[in-house]
Every structure is written in structure tokens, then in C-alpha cells.
Length: 296
Image 1 (spheres, rainbow, N blue to C red):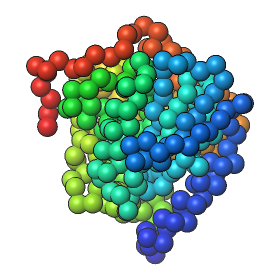
Image 2 (image 1 turned 180 degrees about the vertical axis):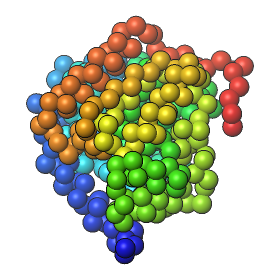
Image 3 (image 1 turned 135 degrees about the vertical axis):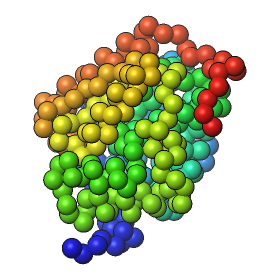
Image 4 (image 1 turned 180 degrees about the horizontal axis):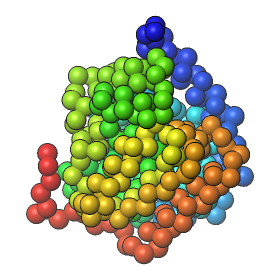
């Protein structure tokens, strides 16, 4: 079986994902407004009658090497529209040009910027963006910054280890060169020599005590299903309020790849219900107690 040249694969795959997102069905009457914030290209995804006190920070997926404003604007608009809240969608650094921890550090700066302007921040991430969002929460705790009201992980990538990638694709019967071997190569580019057990890269190794309420959406045919199930169990055992929202027969990326299926409407509605619940019942997050100790 011929190994894929990852450096040739990257530009082609970026273009395909951008085109997919451009063809996705956006919400009615949304507007995308470009702005550079803290040195990062961003888009404000604005929907009618949005709250002035609440914002969503959506970290896009793409295995840490692809994904962009172009690929995820319409996806973000559907989430924003259902909740009635605008979204900030950033183009944080991607591998191989900007490997770990550049993108994470950019997201910390953007989050701090949002804290100055909004009372409530909801954190959303899909696939690798879901893993990055969890790493962001860990960084916020270490920096003693207010946490988001809630976290929404859409098929989040929480364990980037080689053995986890092999297990993931074995679970769906995929032995192609575009399965585990390619994912391992892409993870190597992102990690840039850093250990894959670093909790800021593989959140499955994080201490989750004190994390905000979580919603994780995953399909039973998603190659990340088993690691998301383990993560959800770990979060529950560590006292996190978590909803594990499972969709039968759905595969990875189904929100983007199958925009017209009934499961999408249900998924967006479930996100909206979860987010609204936690904003309604809580006040703006206070800083973590200085006496609280966390693993470095």
C-alpha cells in the first residue's frame, strides 16, 4: 500500500474542505464581517436579533492543518441562528506553518479579547477544533481566567496518539492510506516534536475537575466515537456536567457532509437548548480561586 505524501496532500485537502464549506447551506439572513483581532484573521458571524451580552467562539476543525473562515462560515451560521447569538470564527495558526502551540496561544488572546466585550462566552469546537477548545479551557484555568459558560464539542479529537488513531480507524474497518497512517503524519506536523500525551494536545489526559458543562455530539460510525465515549465517561467521573449526544449511523463530519439530513436539524436544536440552559441559569463566570491547584 503506497504511503501518501502528506505535504502534497495538504494543499489539495485544504482546497476541498474550503469548497465543501462554501457549498454548505447557511442560515437565513446571516452576515459575515471580517476583522483582524489580536493579529488573527477572524469573521464575525452575525444573525438577526442576536444577544448583545453573549458570544460564541467557534474553533474550526480540520485535523489542525486545514479549515478556515471559508470552510466554516455557513456551519457557524447555523449554530448562531439556532441559539440567537453571534459567533467569532478565527483562522488560528495551522500546521505545518504554525504548529503547536501557536494556534492555542492565539485562541487564548482572542478569548481574553471577548471577555472585555461580552458577559457570556460559549465555546464551540468541531473535530480538532473541539480538542483545541478543551486545551483552551485548560489554559484558562492555569491563567486564572473566567471560564466559558459551556463547551460544545462536535465529534472532538481528544486523543492524537498513534495507537489511538490506529484504534479509531480499525473500529470502522478503514485500512486505507488515508486513514490512520495519514492522520498520524498530520498529528506529527501539529505536535512538532511535543509529546502526544501532553494534555494541551490530547485532552483525554487533562484533569477535568472544574470544567464548565459540556455537550459532546458524535455519531456511532464516527472513527472518533470510542475516544469520545471514553472522554465523556472520564468527564462524568471527574464531576463535570456532561451530555453525551449520540447519533446512530452518523460518520465523522456529518454536519458538513450531509447538510440536509434530519439529524442535522436535531443536532443544532440540541446545541441551542444546551447553550441557552446554561446561560440562563448562570451568572458571568468568576475567576478560579487562587488557592485551587492544577496540574502543570
